[in-house]
Image (cartoon, rainbow, N blue to C red):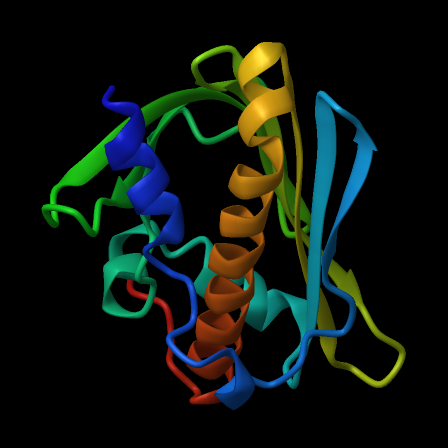
Length: 183
């Protein structure tokens, strides 16, 4: 995979004007070491977790609302091998990445695999039920690796933060619009 194309894919969902977006509950990048950064985003969605999960995991309809994550196919279960598709803004083509899935139905899914050039990420999508019937959607990542992470880790983490914030906003808008999953 071409590293530049992948970095462009990550940046594809960065908000055009961050000031227009609803602020996230808690977002940021934390530098744990020269080789390890975490990215954390969370947003409150005015819908129950079951509704959020149904939209989030409607893999066929992701392209209707997500500018980055386009779908997942394969063995969608804990320990399953999946293919995750992202859009490259540099040429509009789909970038395909294979992952081993950690999956808990209705709660979370994640993967922790090589990302690019010696960098590993631990990307998680997670739902938390709130007492008032709403949902906190959390998207996080731990990015770590050798020399490249030391040199570009901050840049990559910043691009991920922007992309995750945009995805979160798009998910919130889709769920709160009352869109129903296919099938």
